[in-house]
Length: 125
Image (cartoon, rainbow, N blue to C red):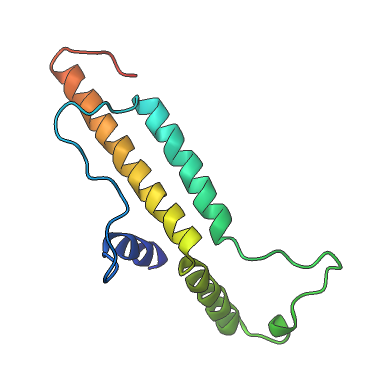
């Protein structure tokens, strides 16, 4: 469910905002190699994962006061609420958009590579 939320959030345009992503160019745009494109995906997803991680427990080892005596449902609710709050920050939104864009680029590069091999063209990169 969280994945569906992230995907919908990235794909649904913001009201009153212009698209910050460049429009894909037709035809001869140079795509990165398949391996490089998927390496970029890994980098962007690690960056997004780091931004989505909750804050660390204080160095003295004491748990935050709000976690005392919570049941598993309240704990899960708190975790998902925290995730939702982090997803609302502009920095995390931008990282999510970059991650989705990199996946799109990698999939496109993979499809182009398969197409070229099917036509007897270039070897995979």
